[in-house]
Length: 301
Figure 1 (cartoon, rainbow, N blue to C red):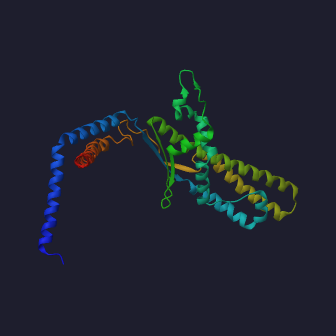
Figure 2 (spheres, rainbow, N blue to C red; figure 1 turned 180 degrees about the horizontal axis):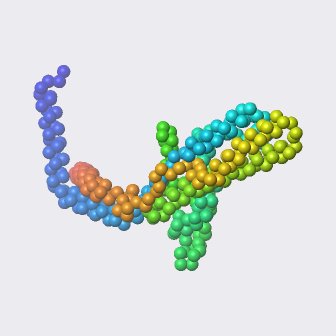
Figure 3 (tube, rainbow, N blue to C red; figure 1 turned 90 degrees about the horizontal axis):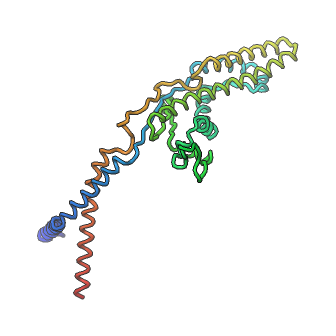
């Protein structure tokens, strides 16, 4: 068992080590001060010279109410005439399936590369390789579309809240106005893309059904074809008249304030500067004392 004398000895040794540490820090206090000053200065300078990055965000919600009403009518017809509908390539997708498809298109390489090309943002993404005065790429040449897609995918984030269904698109970029412009343009383009796909699909189905209608004389078959045609016309009409076909904008992206970047966080840098400097100073003092102690021991030998 540990007796009281041993406990007192342990406390005495701990107290002695603490005072030794304090005395070492006090002896080399100028090292600590210099380390804190240098580190704080570096962090403050970094806070002012690092180019700020801003975040623009838009919030969307799947525009499934109107589509679901038309899809419900279409599904009821398909249930009765499934064989003919399958030949025509007709299918009434649910809202969730349509939203998943739109999100997949939104994240796709083809959609992103077309956006980068149409908006001509490659020179902005790779400004170091672009000669603005000549309006041409430097000797390194233009980056490949695949590389631009990977780069853009890093600054763009697409997420969906499974509980609410809300879709968030955000872009982090050094130009706050361009970031907001890009986000809003992406939301506009995905709606246009899904509208075009829906119209093309409906047109193809209508073309097939109209040919079948002309080639048959059976009353029952003609009636079924007419009902399918009616459903497809409604589907095409909805796509033609609805700008926000896939998603409705809940919160449009606005350019952040110039003094509100996501990084660098100047206050955090200003707080970290002294702490990092003090930590390096303490480590430096301990390392120096250890080095001098070993040097003295080596000299005595």
